[in-house]
Image (cartoon, rainbow, N blue to C red):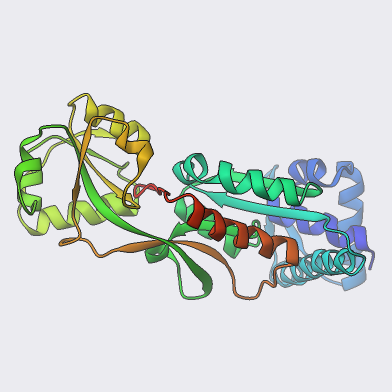
Length: 306
């Protein structure tokens, strides 16, 4: 069994086809096909089966070999990182994912400091929804993600970073701003700007309205807090957001932020990672910088809609 055979099979299985594996491995399709054929002959079993002209499916043996190849490649990457560290070299990759608003408002501060300290680390930064981030973590495609703690399953490690609370954004002088404690029935009287219908946060909100028998009207869907705040300021409707208190960026807009702590439990932005993943020093350094920047820059924001 050769190393390139394992790599070729892994990418064909992971990416679902030879064409994508060719781009990932810089090998020709015929070379990868021959590698897998030789591998199957050596193991004495079929690993892949074709469905139609272009689709592939793993056999039972293929699924087991995929798990084996995934483990081997992960251990190889970890070994390479550890050997570089023993040599005193801070060389490797750091893959991070977070929602757009977190990247926009927070990461410029943390990244500037990190890049200065670790110029030889290859960074990959992804703008993704919270569910996509969790999937990437589980699959081992990224090292760190930032999401809301309430969305993190128990089989992942989560480090609390910032406490957040739910607010309702309204234009300045809106009638709701005069209420001491805003209710969902009061909110339902006004046009709402809510996240897209396929997101969990939206379904949770609608369930609450329906349980109370509140008749509500959704005038706009928005998956971005900045976008929602713009249209709230225009007077199109009102919107929910999950924010850290005293956000200077959003406070630049002519908006009221009505606290909803009496209806929604506080949450936390967390740094999430796999429990079986041991982070090398330069990856742990990013977490340290992130928390240090949080103390020196007293603001952060995460999109409740993602």
